[in-house]
Length: 44
Image (cartoon, rainbow, N blue to C red; front, side, top):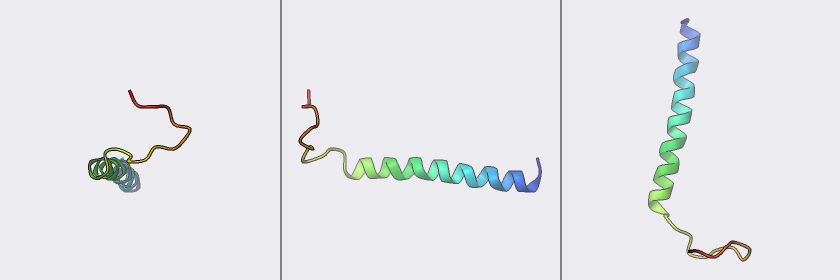
């Protein structure tokens, strides 16, 4: 692999894994909605 390909691979991995970690952190901090939208189905 060329140097450019390695740099872009690392950049893509950081974006993907960073987004995953940010999503997990957001869900840990705010696990459930307090108020549901009116057209949402009821919870089971």
